[in-house]
Image (tube, rainbow, N blue to C red):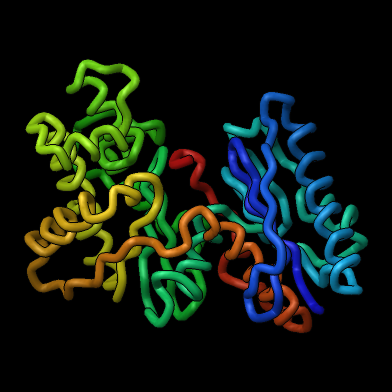
Length: 326
């Protein structure tokens, strides 16, 4: 059976799969990234994990994987297959594509950025399936974004398209790691809500999930913290939809796990802010933490499909940078 290897590398864990031509997950596995052992050990863990998957595929399906796709965080030069920089993994200028291809017997390897790769999966086979234009916004430690157009992800001229987390929604506000003040991710990310709720509740261990539970129980302080985040997020999203006119807004990441505690007030806040703009559907991401792995599989199949084409295998094949949102 023809199949590809898919790898999604995160700061603490890796998800991997063997993916069939129809997108079926033939085998899934997880492993700790082991970043405490240093960047070289992390790279070796990735290579070893991929080699194990290749051997498994050979044994089960009678042939090795036809290609591999890998999604990594940080700054990614997908055209040259280089993982340029990732603060949470400590690596710089890792020739990931070449290293993986060598370890996997010379098969073609596609490299992509984690958020855009996850967005590719959500757009094609997840919550954006059937939408010709969508915006995928994961609300995690930071806020990133992926702009979907016609089943592909638009990276922009320099690879920075979709960085909605760095739209300034509160001019002169809280300083952001990107150098600006008042960025969206400083007010509406899961980490921002955690900080605000820890302060408001007096519990330094409290986080965004605790805030959501307190909102559900009617705690007025939690409601204020939550609504401040929702209002900031709505301001950022309306700016984005004014520019992009997406058919669907897909919201994912840790904050989206609050379900309708987030989506009910968010839909209302977005609707209150639109004037001439067309209101898009605001929906939760469908693929959860498997999006990056599924997207990596799509990258691998795209690479094979365009193997004889001189054009890039996808619009993901440009340098990307979401490090300030990672």
